[in-house]
Amino acid sequence: MRRKHRLCWLRRASQLLALALFLYLFFATAFWYIGNIPVNAFFRLDPWVGLLAMVASRQLIASFAWAVLVLVLTLAFGRAWCGWLCPLGTTIELSGGQSRGRLPGRLWALKYVVAAGALGTAALASLSLALLDPITVLFRALALSLLPALDWALTRLESLLFQVGALQGALVAFEEMTRGRIIPYGEASFRLGLSFFIFFVGILFLNQMRPRFWCRYICPLGAFLGLTSKVAVVRRRVDERCIDCGRCQRMCPTAAIAGKEADFKSDAAECIMCLECEALCPVQAISFGVPGSMWPDALYSPSRRLVLGSLVGGVLWGLLGKPKPSQGGSLGLPVIRPPGAQGADFLGRCIRCGECMKVCPTAGLRPALLEAGLEGFWTPVLVPRLGYCEYACNSCGLVCPSGAIRTLPLAVKQEVVLGKASIDRTRCVAWADNTPCGVCEEVCPIPDKAIRLQAGQGRGGGGGGRVPRPVMIEERCIGCGLCEYKCPVEGESAIRVGIRFPGEGEEED
Image 1 (cartoon, rainbow, N blue to C red):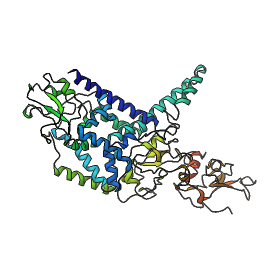
Image 2 (cartoon, one colour; image 1 turned 90 degrees about the vertical axis):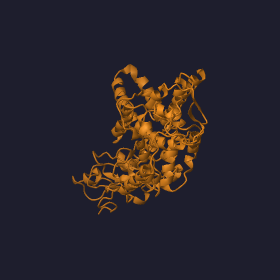
Image 3 (tube, one colour; image 1 turned 180 degrees about the vertical axis):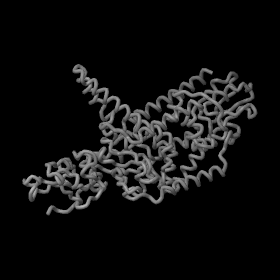
Image 4 (tube, helix red, strand yellow; image 1 turned 60 degrees about the vertical axis):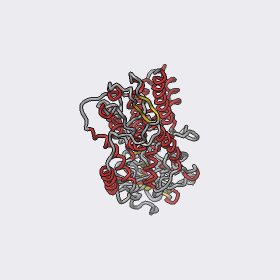
């Protein structure tokens, strides 16, 4: 019995260590840290998103070779990933949970519907349903919701405390130590941040209705690993010493154990190998090992009709996003992708994980809504007015776990064209108001400058000479958006990437 309790403590230690590693890699996903640290390790271990990405892109993706380790673990010990290593599962378990009211017994089918629907969508080269993967759910909630909220609160608290002279030195040291490492460089407020937060809180709230509600009924990775677990080598066993007390059934966090009529057998597809039932059994009738039958009775198995219907539903959902959006989004809006994401297979590889948005040092990468079409929902787009593509940064390609954003050497990345900037002469103060301004030319990071100041000619509004005015040299522009970000015009910038204004490129008369 003591050994069994030690195994339970070992499981809890494994859960906490895995969660701590996930959080470490999350904060290490920063401009300063990436390099030899595999910050995307948990995504590369995820066999579900790996399978979806390979189906959607019609390619084998080498970076997901790590996922074979999880599959081997599952074939050996069942859904041990869910009970021992999954960071979202651990977070859910730490939030507590209890059974309230009655739920339909067939609710188990939901996770198979979600999984089959995602596969059907991936068959049409769309990963729009990959956003329900548990690793992406937790990472997005932290990166696009909770961390920006923490940054907002800390920034305002520091502004308040900075008024106290004795604290200024400590606050400056705190900023130097955390800014860019734990706290983002630029204060980012993502437009979908609240929705990510609500979704994450909703998962924890459902846990108060049933322990591990997400794991039982919704998680597509759990469904995939559950089907694999049906042929696992090590599983739960109940011998003749069982006294039918029912304790194991009542405490099982995933309701994997059947009732007395089934001799308290368990469904290998639902058991997360928590071992709590073994430690709880008063007569030691429960053990874990090689079962007598490789195919024990299941509490629930998805029917072929259900699976086929879900696959068709996923295909129909994928068709809603067709045809693929072009460089301009389906709503006619400019869509600027990260460098290295210009390939035709980008939408078939992007798993909507948020790694690129987390690592972007300017917070310029944002999740798309409908401007990139349904297929591009929650994929990264650059919004230059909010943050530009740093000329000396290629971090997004380094952290992308699926290769949707290719890893480009910095020298190559600096030549990738994201778009073309254009000057709106009706808003530019130098053109419209004859007011001196050369900010866009000054900040342009291209060594030979993609913007030049055209010498003033003729007569200005007050009878004086015209001030120098910015003119684009289109063949040099890479569309990084720094000029749009820095443009001092209030509101919409006078120079924008991806928009062609009338009169742009014409020389002054």
